[in-house]
Amino acid sequence: MPFDVVIVGGGPAGLSAALALGRARTSVLLCDAGPRRNATAEQVHNFVTRDGTPPDEFRRIAREQLAAYPSVDVRDAAVQSVAGEKGNFRVVIGADTVEARRILVCTGMLDELPAIEGLPELWGHAVFQCPYCHGWEAKDLAWGYLVRPEQGAHVLPFALRLRGWSRDVTLFTNGELELPEEERRRLRSAEIRIETLPVARLMARAHRLEAIELEGGTLVRCEALFVHPPQRQVSLVQALGLALDDDGYVQVDPMKRETSVPGVFAAGDLTTRMQSAIIAAAAGMHAAAALHVDLVLE
Ligand SMILES: Cc1cc2nc3c(=O)[nH]c(=O)nc-3n(C[C@H](O)[C@H](O)[C@H](O)COP(=O)(O)OP(=O)(O)OC[C@H]3O[C@@H](n4cnc5c(N)ncnc54)[C@H](O)[C@@H]3O)c2cc1C
Image 1 (cartoon, protein in one colour):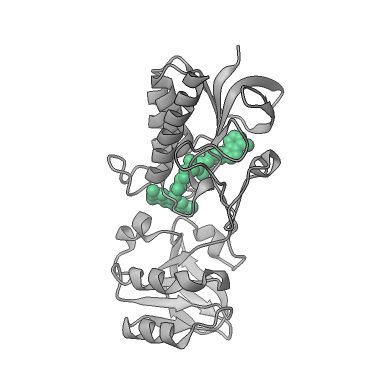
Image 2 (spheres, rainbow, N blue to C red):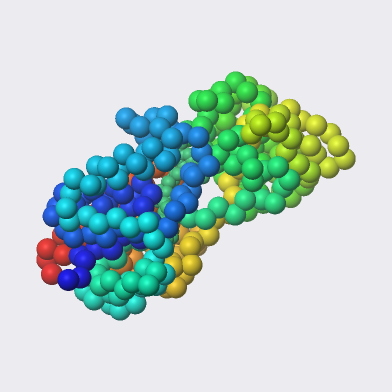
């Protein structure tokens, strides 16, 4: 018997979709390959009822709740390929091939961390992408914001926002971004310092960031650093040939959450720059309802 839906990816989006589909008595196979975006984070924040829960615990609770629904099957395995068409997909998982009427892709995004000495080890501990997720725990510390040239118009609003959590904010252009004078003026008036030299390395002790060393040896006190690394899709998304928007996110119909490939739906980080666990979970629920209706109509 084919599964009604194979969900690829067991982060908040995939888990939430599996729950909604299981409760709708739809047969589901949820496949998860392992590392999620927040794997290194100590706690998940800003998810109402789960604020402060370690990521592994979040996933354990979700899977425990899925176990109550007999039509949901969960496998810790990577989906290697998807072939076929709407109503009749063949999904290769290790040595096994299963059939599915629909596919829901919830594979998240891959962050390409800057190759700055000391930075990758601190990702999720003292280097963060989102102040709503980790700002509270780091409030009133010395904060830094490392920008990339491509961020252009996003730099000023993000930097100004950080001042709500800390009075001590330094913006690092890493020698790569020339800020317009008007932006520099507004940053100065918010008492945000600007360091234009390239960053040589991050100095830390036991996962606690202490300072940023600039080229030439100057040390700038910094205890929490915000960065928005470039992101890319996993290879399966590329292999499926799903249409992407200009920023590289999977395009979906806003109501149905169906992608450019009929029968393939998508939810979570891979579809949007607006990334958080609860937003991904909501998108998973949305996709599940749309999929359910689509199956019922068929
Ligand atoms: C360091 C860090 C800390 C964060 N902290 C927070 C926080 O505190 N609060 C918050 O709201 N958000 C936080 N976020 C953002 C949040 O983690 C993401 O928005 C959320 O995890 C997105 O959920 P998702 O289900 O779309 O993708 P993910 O959680 O990334 O899950 C995708 C899953 O798909 C799997 N996968 C990929 N390819 C395949 C395949 N071929 N076969 C099977 N499985 C596959 C991956 O292994 C992964 O398990 C944080 C992000 C980072 C990077």
